[in-house]
Image (cartoon, rainbow, N blue to C red; front, top):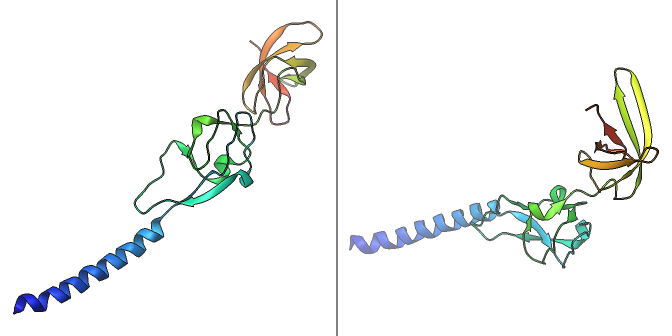
Amino acid sequence: MRRRNVLPRLRAAVLAFAMLGGTALAAEQEVVLVPNRVIYPGETIVLSSLKEITLRPGKVRPDSVATLPDELDGRVAKRTLLPGRYVPVTALREAWLVDRGASVQVVFAAAGLTISAAAVTLEPGAAGDVVKVRNLDSGKIFTGVVLADGSIRVGAS
């Protein structure tokens, strides 16, 4: 007789626990961004080409993928990105500030001395990238760091 009285209470307790656990899991579900169409190499990613999906309960997003707006918006795809799939961080790059063959201003500054010259980039680069450039006057090839304004900073070697 005791068994019958305990079973309904046990069932009710298990059901209540499951319902509470379900809401806790629903609250922990993560919303991530994935492409909603094919994004081709060299294409800049815009938020309109992405869609939000909610991960299933208990599913955790991998560490090596970009799923947040600030990780994806304005980046350029290095390879084809398929709809509904995670975007690997290695498949993205910053947008180029200087393209190959672009005319740029090269600046050398040290101890109050500033020298600038016109040059042509021999490879593309984003801010902070080291790129090769050719001086237009002398034809010499050297390397410099791309600055945020699109100019190239060189140092003494």
